[in-house]
Image (cartoon, rainbow, N blue to C red; front, side):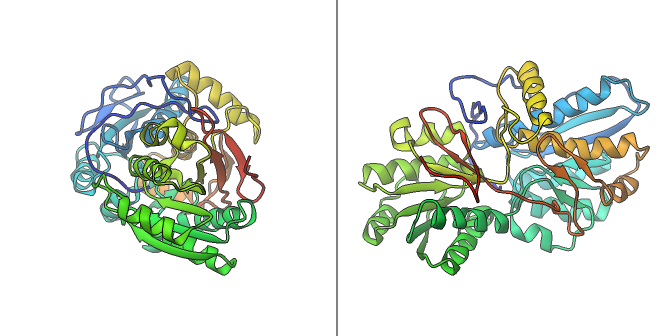
Length: 397
């Protein structure tokens, strides 16, 4: 994910699906950094978490923050030899705010690792800082393809990139939705444009006819794009960007008479999509994501236990990227448990890590990507967004 702009706290709840109407128990977060789930003393090491915790798209970042917090609190509760202090950095998803926060985290807080940044744009800005400082990072949610092409040695992520997501989404649209004509719209930002460009290419190789357009993420009137879509008469529209814009676009599409399938990516997998589009307009909207929301434990028993622990701690169901936040923290926890407390040693350990997370196997390739990657499909039903299944197997209702 990358970022969208204005300040607004979004409240969401996702159950293996998204459920609206329940406010997350949020801890106060300050732009300069805040402690959560710390060791309660001066000893130990500090792991940071960076992302949009109070901005317009905070609904996508608070869940992974809480997942990471839970993992670290559970580890500290075992009374380990080396405890972990968890420090949060609220970038509001903005690269210009993430940069000084990263510098302070490295120089002043002496973090030995960073969970995040959450979005792709801020990751591009923070990456060079962490590389120079030789501090490893594991993002739970930044999916831009280019991040793995920077040659960074200290960067990792526990989610599939947009190349994998685009192929999975294109495969689903062509084979399950049976879409022969697909219109792709992006917010013209790093994440959204990269995703839609890749889907257009992948769908084209599978025989689909495509057209593309971009909208201003700060605008509210998308009638020009809606008119272009209606003229093209696509079987499906795919939006690359975040739920605030997706909600406005989907609402205007339905009000403009479009009857085909509407789909978006991980940046829109939030209750805010339904709120923005309106429940009636949002019905049947499809979402693709490299994230796994598995409260029932269909994929593995760890997922079910995590969902139970998460609800007990935060009073809400597992949400988008909460699983990945937990797994990102687990990567660092395993390093500390193995006796590594310096950034360089932790980074070297991450190269050899091979363990089952609560979502997926945690094993990185030479570029910092997960060795095995899957894409999952979700569909809006009422006020929920339940999991349909793997993109290769999911069927539309």
